[in-house]
Length: 42
Image 1 (cartoon, one colour):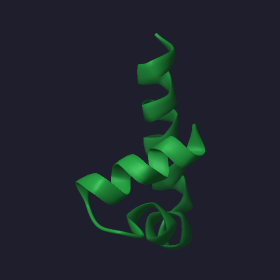
Image 2 (image 1 turned 90 degrees about the vertical axis):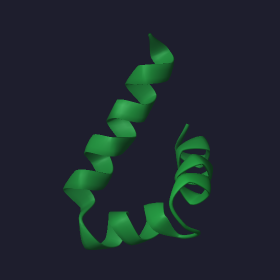
Image 3 (image 1 turned 60 degrees about the horizontal axis):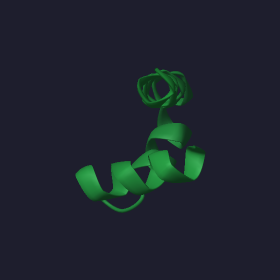
C-alpha cells in the first residue's frame, strides 16, 4: 500500500511529494497514509 500511496501522490502533486512530506512532517505523512489505507480497506 505504501508504494501505491507514493505513486498516487506523485501523480497528484509532484514527483517526490510523499518522500518530502515524510521527511519534513512525519506526522502529516502518517495521517495521509492512514487515510489512504483506510479508504481502500472499507
